[in-house]
Image (cartoon, rainbow, N blue to C red):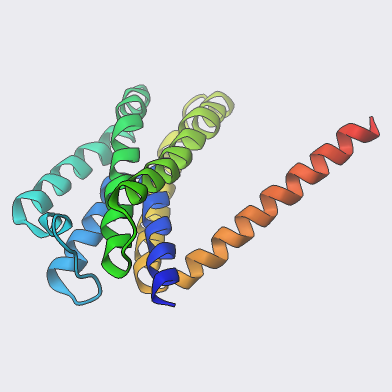
Length: 189
């Protein structure tokens, strides 16, 4: 069960990084520094350094405000296209390594893929459609919602990782059902 718990937690944290790179990094850093919920192994224990925590707070603050300003948020999304997958790779590898002996390279690739996928869907499909539909007025509330979801998902991934597993199963099942319905509808035409 520890193996699944570590994997589910790692998936949840990296998915959260796809929405906001700095929230899961900060949560992992602070929980590892001040609690026994996370005990990071070397080299991931560097995340508990005050310098690293300070840098995460500063970068997270900049990203928070940049994502709320129209036009600046598009530039921010381009920059975050590199940052969010990298953050996902770090939190996945750091967290998976806490409870398992999964290869750090495999962990980083998995985190990169998960965070990159979430970020891509958000920045290529959701945000442009939202911007077009609301003339940009919906970007700020959605950005705030993304930050709240990222925070909630990060905390949930650490405290109750089995919920992440259930969410993953539901998402995959929903996606398969949706694809099956779409294929059935296309065949009917």
